[in-house]
Image: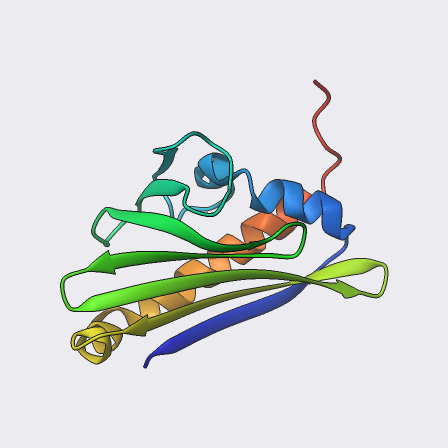
Length: 144
C-alpha cells in the first residue's frame, strides 16, 4: 500500500492551526495544489461530510470525512475505480507551537501503478498543502 507523509512545525497554537486546517473550502487560497474545494454538505468538517476537490493533473475527487477528533485530527477518504485513498490530517503539540502531519495512503488493485505514475505529484502536493497551512496559521487571524 503506497503511503506518503509530510510533517512540519508551525509557530502557532493548535486551535489556530485547526481553524485553518478545517476551513477546507479555503485551501485553494493556501496552495497551488488545489484549484477548488466545495463542500457538498456545507463547509463544516464533520463525519460523513463530503467535499469535491479539484487538483491540477489529478481527477476530480469526492472526499468523505470518516473520522474526526475535534481539534487534533480528521481523516477523509476518496474512492475511484481500483483505488481507495485515505488522507489523514494530524495536529500534535510541539513546544509552544504545533506539529502538522499530512498522510495519504492508497489501497486497491491500482494503488501501486498509480503510485508509480503520480507519487512525485502526491509528495509535492502534500508539501505545498502543509506549507500553505503553516503560512496561514502563522498569520494573525482576520478580523470579522
